[in-house]
Length: 229
Image (cartoon, rainbow, N blue to C red; front, side, top):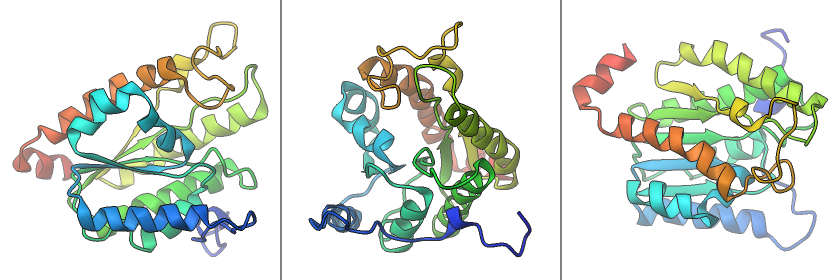
C-alpha cells in the first residue's frame, strides 16, 4: 500500500443502522455523556471483546477499582472506533491509560490495512491525550482449528509489533499464544464460540493486563516522562 493510497480501515465512519433501532448511536451518545460525568484513570475502547469484559467478575475485581470506563460496542471495526473517538468519546476526560482492542471484525480488509487502522486510532489518541499511555491488545486467534483468519490476526499483531514503537506512548500486549493448545486447537473453555472469551478466557487475558496497568499507574510523573523519551 503506497503512502498516497487511502487505507479503508483508517477511514472513520459510523455503523449504518440497518436494523432501524438506533442502538449503536445510542451507545455512543451514552459514552459521550459518561465522559462528562466521570473521571476515569483507565479507558477501555473497542469491540465486543471489550464490551463483554464488564459482564465478568474480572472487571469488578481488577479493572473497576482502577476507575475504568468501558467504551466497547459489539461488531465495531477500526473505522467505527475511529469515528467514535473523533466525535466526543475522548472529550472532557484525561485517563492515564487507554486500552485499545479492535480489529477482528475488519473482515473486508487485509492484515496490513487492519494494523494501519489500529495505528491511526493510536495516533488520534496520542494527539488528543498526549500524556496518556496506550496499551494495544493484540488480536486473539479465532476458530477451533487453524484457519486463515487466525493467520491474518497474527499478521496484524506482527505489523503492530513493528510499528507501535514509533509512538513512544503505545505498546502491544499480545497474549494470543496462551489460547492455542499444542495440537492447534482452541478450547471452548476459553472461547465459548471460538471467538468470544469465557470467564476463564478473560482471566487468562486479565492477569498480564492488570499487572501492566498497575505498573503504568504506579509510575511517577518523572518516570513516565523518561519512558517516553
